[in-house]
Length: 149
Image (cartoon, rainbow, N blue to C red; front, side):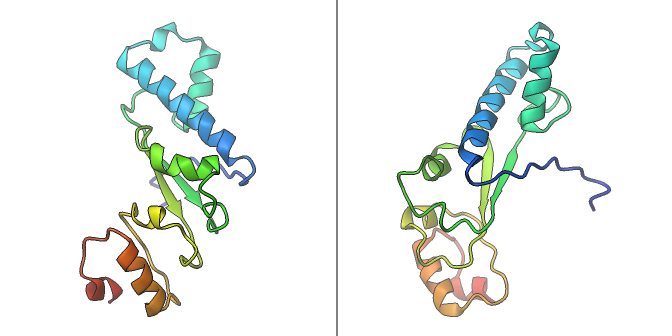
């Protein structure tokens, strides 16, 4: 499949992620303005390249580029509600960013995050007790037993 679809990726440390996300959100806002107001010819080549590089696209042909952000082993990052990264989870819907949180255990995850989950993937080794706890704190619109199967 990788020969058919090229997905630009960027690996960032947790120490740098807040600044990187701020840059991404700002670049996406600039991209949207350029596309909606037909300003492509008014940009310098350096500014065009900067916007496109940050977003990970080649040109301004895509009307609404979407970004996937994967947080590996994310529990420690999202335990503190005061961290800017925690707050971004709830206000970044407009810039079309989807967050994937890879978690080993969901027990310590704040209920406000669990309540905003709309898709979940469980991998082998996840026990039924933890699944039940998460299921009742989330907004999964399917029968619990069918999801577990």
